[in-house]
Length: 115
Length: 111
Image (cartoon, rainbow over all chains, first blue to last red; front, side):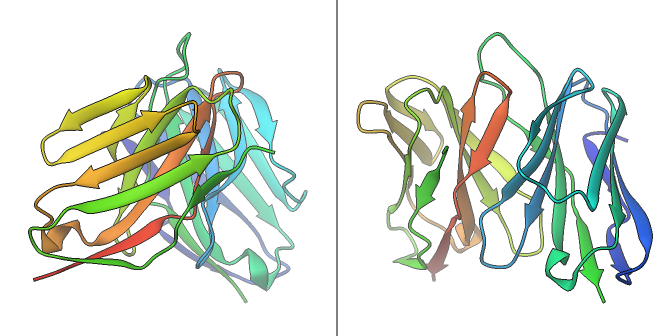
C-alpha cells in the first residue's frame, strides 16, 4: 500500500458506543493530523502530532481521544459522541522540515454517522 | 486567531475561460501556502504550493502570493469541466506544523 490509508471508510455508531478510527501512512512522514469536515464548514484541524508528540489540540471535546503510537500510525478513539459529531474525518501526514514548506497528504477519510 | 478566508462561491465560468480563486489569511507569520482540489465525496488533493512572493506556474495553474497584503490566489487557465470541484486554500505555520484551511470555493466549469 502507498500513501495514507484510513479505516473504516464508513462508520455508524450509537451515542453510547466506543469506536476507533485508524490511519496509517506509508510515506515516511513524521507529522500526522486529524481534521473534521462537516457539511458547508471549513476543514477543522483537530490534532497535530509531530514525531509522535501531540503539538496541537484545537479545543476538541474530550469525547475525541487521539493516540499516536509511532510516526506511521494515528488513531482517533471515539466515545459518547453526539449526532452533531457526524462528519467526514480526514487523516493527513506531512514531513517536518526546518521551514513549513511541506504539504499534507490526505487519506480517503472515514464517513462517521452518529445515531 | 489564525484564520483563512475564501469566497465560498459558487463560481461559474464557461469552458476555456480563466477561473480566479482568492484567499486571504490573518497571521503575518504564515510561511507556506497551498491550494487543494476536492471533488465531491473525495479527499483533498494538492494542486499547488507557494512560499515566496510572486507567481508560480504549473501547467494551466498559476498561484500568486502577496505577503504584504496577506493574499494568495489561484488562476486556472483554459478551464475544463473536469476542473469543477471545491478549491481549498491552506496556510501553514512553522511552529507546530499547524495547517489551516479556508472554507473552500466551489467552482463549476460549464461546457
